[in-house]
Every structure is written in C-alpha cells, then in structure tokens.
Length: 111
Image (cartoon, rainbow, N blue to C red):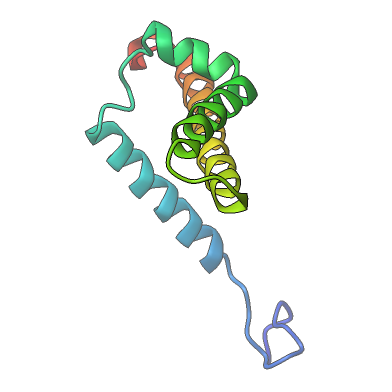
C-alpha cells in the first residue's frame, strides 16, 4: 500500500529529511561559531554595532565611497561603496541576532 503522505508528483514522501538536514546544518554552524569565539561576551563596539545596524552600514558605505572617490568617480564607485555598506549592515544584523541568542541562553553561555 502506498504511503498516504507521499507526494502526487513522483510518489516521494517527505518524512522529515529536510528538517534533519536543517538541524544538522544549524548544529554544524553553531559548532563552528563556538570554535571561532561566538560564545564570548560582546565588546562595547559589538554592542553599539548590534544596536545600530543601519547606521553601521551607512557609515561604512560613506567612508568607503569617500576613499574610493579619491581614485575614481562614477557609478562603479557608488555601487561598490553601497555593496560594502550593505554587507557590513547585514553583518551587524547578524551580530544583533548572536547577542540576542546569548542573552536567551543565559550568563553561563557567555551573555
């Protein structure tokens, strides 16, 4: 008798395999994070950056744009500065999530 949970397109059943993979990836990431010092308490600069991700990204974009404009002006310079600012802003948002996770886990885990 076919599995009632089987998908109609091809008859493949999803018995939680993707959830197991996701859990494994998350566990691997957390292990790597711990090995690189992700459980350490944040410094004062990290706290400020985590509180102000847009300001961090914009500040880096302006600084990089001003630096690059000394060598070349144009759309490429602006696009590169904005891209680097976006990367820094997203990193600041990730730091905010890391600090929230540390706070949830409690003082025993580095908060």
